[in-house]
Image (cartoon, rainbow, N blue to C red; front, side, top):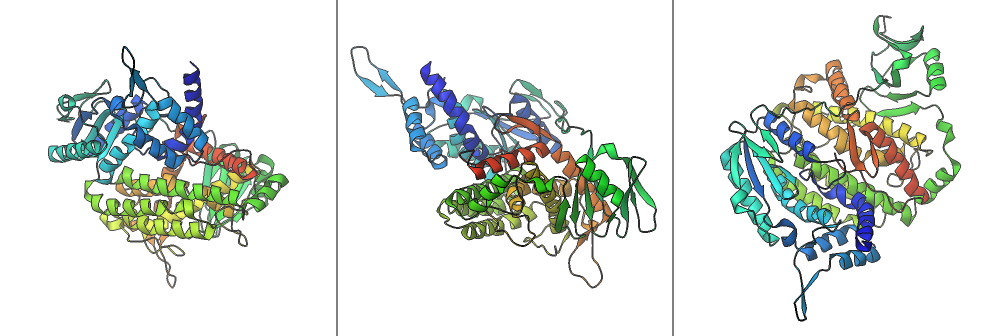
Length: 544
């Protein structure tokens, strides 16, 4: 009983560190994920057009997990030798012979609370081998489904899976490995799958907010209040939108949009923030009621952390969280036709990640982030439809529709981070990764790093594949370089962005559930706690 209590305590402490690196294929023994999520993921792949499924399981999974390898993987994530020593004691198993003598027992102890997490950590390598080759595995513990375009791809997935497990001293269950189709039907995790059932409930986790964000971009126009309503007008005073003020949670204005004194007074009295951005998507600033109420003790801690070893440790964690999520974007959205490009990029980014623990200054970390970006964005661009593909990231100004879309939503996301930091009693100007510079919201740039791939990059690629973002959604201004999004392009992206931000999830942060927007505020609070030393460390969110 005592060992189980200790193991469960360790599991609670280790999960926030281990879970973010487990990848997008694993659904068992993870907070906020389960059978329903795995089945929904498989149904979504069917609706994407994949017709065939490899069904397999790992033979004698827990007894065959290489414990020494699991321990090495855990040691790479956890620096505390005392914690690792306790883990070693809990994993040590010996069998005794009648009459005396004993020997070590292979594999993870079944029934130990740590075993499922460690099994996932080892099998994440198997998942990654499939993901890197453009396959879409869904693994629930030792039960595996890989959706593919045809039987040939399914058997190729089986070959990769077999080779990957053999490297670990493990093997597939031969009797349970087969290739099936949605048309003929099969069972996975107790759910019967067919060509239409179960339905993919893509909107099931989207919450309808009581109040919404108002985005306005009529150049030369203005936003004013009248009779308890917010009214957006064009330059010629034509009304384009009228909504009750009680239904607006924040205002985002792009370009030359005027804000009346009545709007400022309403925003100040009701705690609604107003974000200002250029037409090209550059963040300009925010009007945040209560922005002057940053706690002095926290601001002093921010300034101290900016050049301290403690702040550098947080900065390292921020870079690791971002690059891990960039890798997950490529794994989630890559398909067989992208395999070579994705494989090369992930390999380069993985090598870059190994440099993070040795970085001795935040300038070095920014260089590492730049090296990861140089490997990442060409692969991200290759995931988009042909007419929207790009070879590298361009900004100030963006030179194509896809880069313009990324810049546009990065700005919207940054504004949310500024507000979240103010709400946490922090000053967005003093960062731990980004140095303070004039009017730059450096800490908000720190906070937004992991959210760029997790929210924005996924939205832009998915929107392009769904036809929400199209090649004709860009325009140019005479005499100026760069591409601007059209009204239709902005509108489609903002709708997709709001849907993503209103998606409810649990397990992405320890003991917390809510929309992704609420998770941003929670991450700001956790970042503040790490900076002032109230928390041992800061960890990124787990992708859900």
